[in-house]
Length: 195
Image 1 (cartoon, rainbow, N blue to C red):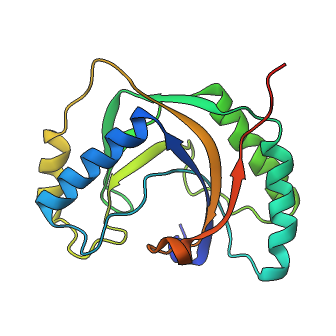
Image 2 (image 1 turned 90 degrees about the vertical axis):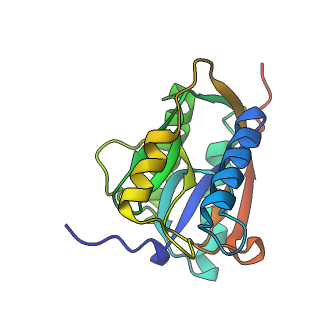
């Protein structure tokens, strides 16, 4: 299988709000401060919806119109998480799993179909996409954890009895950059008015 170079793509991400966002930021800060993984602040909390090819300036207008047409049909989406999980490949990542939500899956499918029709989509490198918020990862880490340290962190993080809830009200198109000014290319609001 061909090696996936995450730096050569752009990402359509959902920005959660509410308790889920606040709790994810709190846990991320607590762990990244105690483990000294990031030199600067850790990456912004988000849920990746899709990877797309790196866009040229002249392609951005078509891309924006395409995404806006799809998100115009969606109200904000309520989401929740009950548990943490760990991905050892490809980047030793501690994640908060987002419960598989039918509306979030519909949004992803609609976006991917529209983007694929325009030739923007990058095929996923996984069979089943797992919606998640990355809490810690080797990506952007100044001092990544050794494998055994990473596994210890994974074992320490506990499951929750009650869900952490949040809402997705906007999507953003990101370049693979840590600094917000360089990272955020476009923003899209989920604002369909209920009947």
